[in-house]
View 1 (cartoon, helix red, strand yellow):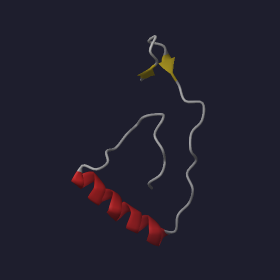
View 2 (cartoon, one colour; view 1 turned 135 degrees about the vertical axis):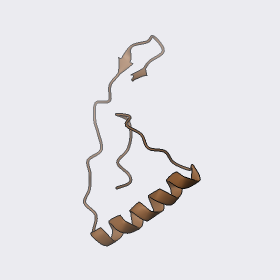
View 3 (spheres, rainbow, N blue to C red; view 1 turned 90 degrees about the vertical axis):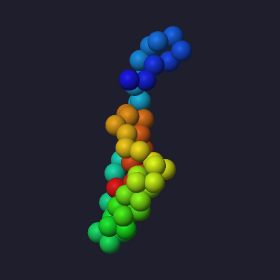
View 4 (cartoon, rainbow, N blue to C red; view 1 turned 180 degrees about the vertical axis):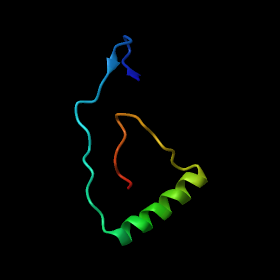
Length: 55
């Protein structure tokens, strides 16, 4: 839950849409994401403000 300075809950008004990706690129992205997760450079998020940049 995200709140503003006054304690009111903030809800995003839009969300990025998933864009398709060829299987070969998806595999390469998955491998890179796993490296970044293991290295602690990125973390999983369920935030409504998160970006669908990785698939």
